[in-house]
Image 1 (tube, rainbow, N blue to C red):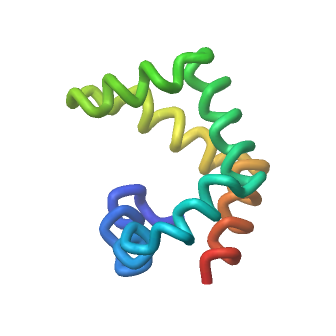
Image 2: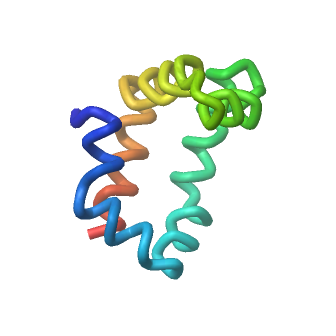
Length: 87
């Protein structure tokens, strides 16, 4: 699986960030909601706090939660579905 930084800096991510309609579709997808739920559980119910700390430069907790979800069978399956939907 690619590294998170590579995903964020990819051409596909750049195109997605410029397409508000696709971003809304992605945001509202059941897979996205499930991933956010998994991230929330992984951060002890404080996903928003982990995101705020990441925005302030302390990304360790959020990065760990993302890594854990990406490495779980369920998370990997959900991410693959999302990837296919974005093609």
